[in-house]
Image (cartoon, rainbow, N blue to C red):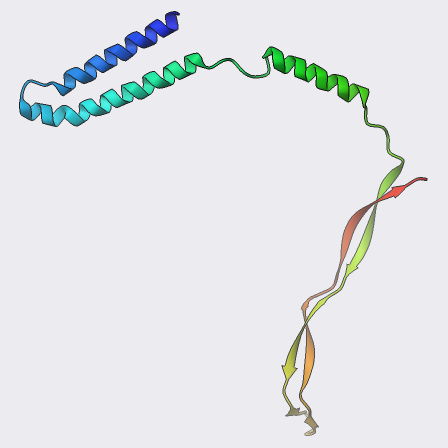
Length: 141
């Protein structure tokens, strides 16, 4: 109750300060300070709204009673269906990955000895072959 009363009083004070800054003595001062008053009033409204929203939010987190019950229930089921030791083990095997080739046309030409070689497609390696490691589960049955 005290928090709500304090926030209401703070909001009223800020709004009254904003209103007094808008209604200045002369017309030139009013125009000059009108934007300033608007900014002060809008910030007061935003701050007041955030304070009110923070007061109305319920507590949530690890200490909530519902969370305690849910945690106890999960603990019960995890103890009841405990993970059993598997019958087997992991092994690492090496797998050969084939190289990748690109075929390009090699036009007809004369070789170093002066003989004519007909045009043909030739294979060029774009990715070399390599071994890849993979984990495999081996059963003991």
